[in-house]
Image (cartoon, rainbow, N blue to C red; front, side, top):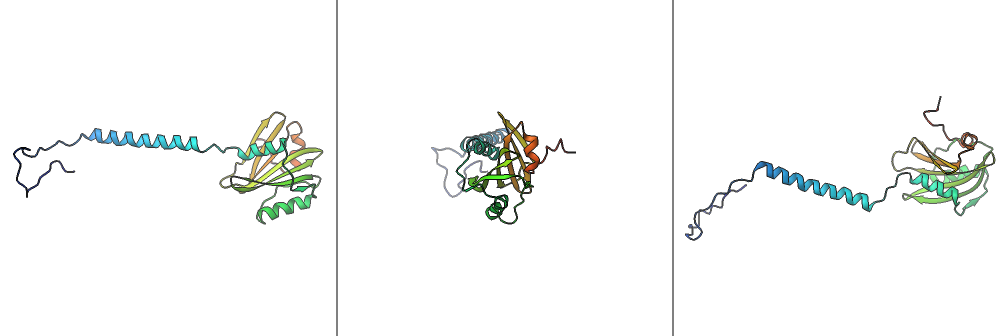
Amino acid sequence: MRLMHTDADLPVDAADGPPVALPPRPERRRVSTSFLFMMIVLVGMVAAIFTLFPKRQNLLMSEAIAAHQAPPAWQLAAPPLGELKAWWLGMFGDKVKLPGIAAEVVPLGLAHKTLHRRATAVARVRAAGIEVTLLMQRTPGMAPRHKERTVGELIAIEWAIGPWAYVAVGPSAAATTWRPLLGVPRRPELAP
């Protein structure tokens, strides 16, 4: 930091007078100004991020509920159960971990969607006479271990097997009937 201007080569101008030494800025003023500027920038960036980018929490569960209430146009209608599993394997590759679906489950339709710029499979099945929607996606990060949400008469259950997230949506009154047929795990706090 330079406190005064000294030019040894030039003569001192009588009009300007001798060079004046300025005292340094107090230490607290320097720190508080830097801190205030940093906080303004930080708060501004956080506010801009939260206003510009929408919250994507529970998007899979919301999409599964919407697909259950208004089914999409099925790309494959009423396939056998073997074709359902083959379609999932063809869509996601051989490393996909499929839930343990019972043999008496009847697929009604299959569709392909894109969520979070990732391939997502939507399937409508009939388990014990109850229509249930399954949604499956490889998650970009960590998938939730287990979440449940009730919307009116429906219950949406999200679980993970490795990096794969699954959501099953069906009537909450008959959940104890269709959950084991689709391989939906019990809530961790209820597991023996």
